[in-house]
Length: 140
Image (cartoon, rainbow, N blue to C red):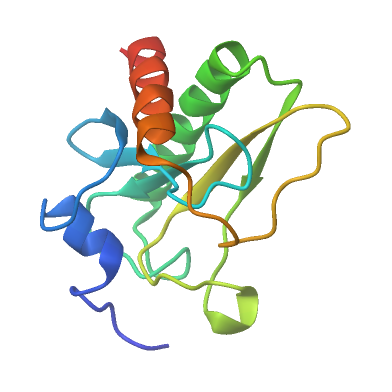
């Protein structure tokens, strides 16, 4: 397995070198909106500690990310009037991973509405800002 790259885009977001639409942060995890959401409210949950993926993350950090993903999912159900939630996590290129910092996709879903294809359409900044504000308020 390839080593963790501290210059991946999520590491840069965690260090504040790149902007994000933050919805949650604590000492071990960070959650922000995907700028190319597959559905409104699509959120990424990451450990703050460097971890390439599920294959090298310490179990305590993985458990905390799962706890925060559940918290985000519950908030999304209310904020976005979701009927369900899709949770996805990919590992290594063969497993579909594109950014090599462990992250969990938490995507609110409505019955009968298909998700957009991955990385297909960048959402407008004002829409992302409004979604982040509402979700962050529900998570505080």
